[in-house]
Length: 101
Ligand code: F3S
Figure (cartoon, rainbow, N blue to C red):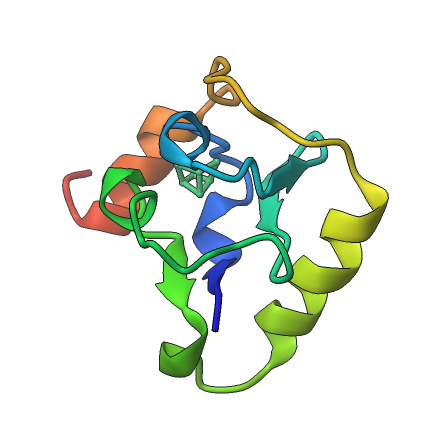
């Protein structure tokens, strides 16, 4: 069991999630983050902190696409442990996703 970062993170990269992860299981590229399913202890602390609801439990996925992407990317990318500046346009994207635009 693991949590998974899904499409809504792309272009946002708010990184509120990383500050509460007790096992540093978030990895990232320039566009978004991914969760290492081996390291994740499924605590769920990150999920309510994401402004765009990008983090879901694997049991709630419609298919394994995002589970596979997270596992593959996390292996190849550096760990992200500290909150960073969101990507340009992240707030506008959040407002569209949350229906506040
Ligand atoms: Fe992405 Fe949400 Fe974390 S936008 S970086 S999963 S807080």
